[in-house]
Length: 106
Image (cartoon, rainbow, N blue to C red; front, side, top):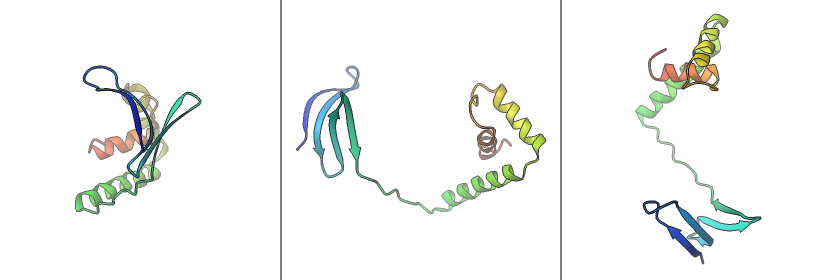
């Protein structure tokens, strides 16, 4: 059985949940060394194999294969895009290229 000590709604202030015990058959909450631990049972995600999802996966796979086959000069270009962009600062150039490719900008 779970015991909830205090809960403040997020609309009336910062969220504060002090709880312990088990919720249903999926979540367990406890405190150890001053830390609140929430453990959830493993969730097996569904695999929607819709045509739109398959097209997106194919597009992503083709972006990765194009990156692998890309010559060094083009990779240097994407490194510069990464360095000069605030949005992509700290992101590997490969991921920058894939982002642009998925948005049909590469």
